[in-house]
Image (cartoon, rainbow, N blue to C red; front, side, top):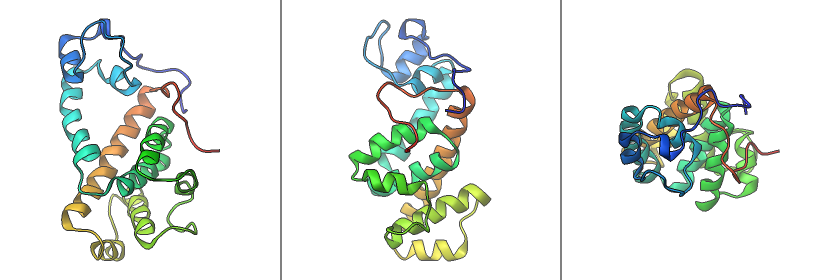
Length: 185
């Protein structure tokens, strides 16, 4: 973790505004676990409410297959140095079929041996977007032979969404949730 302590402390449910509770679908005094990202963003309920709509699209309604979506999210989390993001999506990635070996290989990038052509291209697109805010013509052309236009757009927006989230997590000092791994060894 870049910061060992949060800059913005996660709010207990009892201290959240009615708007924050409504956006999270929670009731005051709820004992149900709440991820640190949501308890932290509860400090700004209007932003959180609107961000959740977009985040829900990228995470749950994207046209990218779940495994490929998680490959992309893990790579941008790694490139941004966001251990919280990487840890949360390690858990989700495993649920979508990514193996421990693949998750560790994500840290090595698109040139690492063992990737399929599509996996390598997806990782290459993430690297290009992170480095230059642009996917090169060669990468775009190769991806467009395997992905639909909607999938290509969802790819760009997934990288942008999780770049933003990684910046927020790093800067606010959101700490790993209990039981969630950090970066691989």
